Length: 317
Image (cartoon, rainbow, N blue to C red; front, side):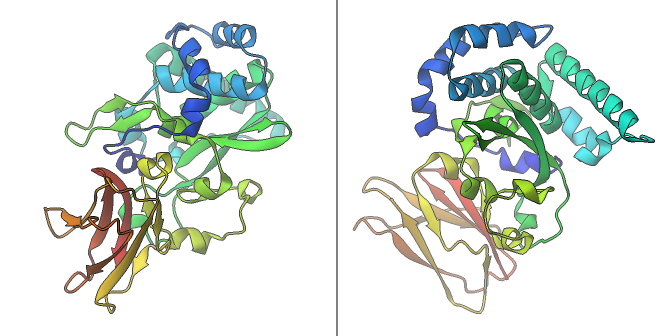
């Protein structure tokens, strides 16, 4: 969880799922924001929605609307490994796990704040209360440029799988809830529907599961390490940025960038980590392919923006 702060920087959202489930979201906004137990919310969800997809969305929306990211707790804990507990046998493990989860959920509801494990535990329990099968998935989150090219990343994040029509779908309520302000290191609520029912391909771009049963694409940990750093606005837009290899060779004088679905009125620009200004990419002729000079940029990070929104970062080696 220690890397999650970087990923939250300066984003906003809109995507097709947000539109598809707009009515669900509007109903859920009227639910109580503070409750002592999740049964109060599950009763409302079961009353208002019949399909499993709508119930899952209602669970996702209530959590992301009402639970803020606990910056202080994240900084204090450092990583999800701080939450481990000891046990002598499977029976004791199960009992302690249940007790631990209930404690985390109670604290989350009381404070209205959580880090990734709290978000995922609330989603798991509330999903089960409305009749859905759900599990917590732990793994690595690629959320900082320094992780580009790193194979052995810490198990520092948790998200969820929920079964809909006998198919596992993925959600990340932590990333869906908002972002951390770069200015004052505080959490800013900003609902993001991009992390609800993420495709396996999109999920892989910044999530790598600890248990490979949740790796539903034919990719490896090495493949994951080579990816650029993708930010949440990348997922909420319709753009596709190439190349998909996050490590650029400085031996090549120019970096060839392609931004698919870049519209006539879209503006793209970039910045090197060694500089403090962005450079505009000329789109006057509806260009979608650009060449960026890499001369003298070895060791830098190159970050691409579209319409002032941060999209992707590459490492130059």
